[in-house]
Length: 119
Image (spheres, rainbow, N blue to C red):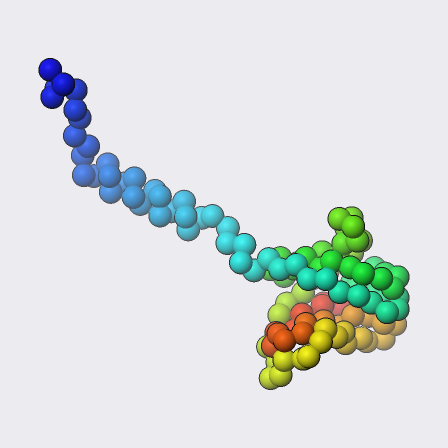
């Protein structure tokens, strides 16, 4: 009596299910490019079009988007990209332009530097 209750799945159904599962995994956004860093500015700086006072900040880099936070509050945003350099600095450092505009942020022991787009 129990033998009649067992159903066999069509191999095509299993194949379609496998393709669907692979498609879902491929469509899921990869978050490996999202990075969080802490940085301290000794003086007032400009990130994008926003002037920030000296202090401690959290940088959230998600692809080409930078979000600057203080205690979970967003205080600035900018477009960024990573560029490789030949050397790894021993400590974090910042390259400034006119009016203390942040141009690059270099992180200790990391070859890639974060280049901040001008406003």
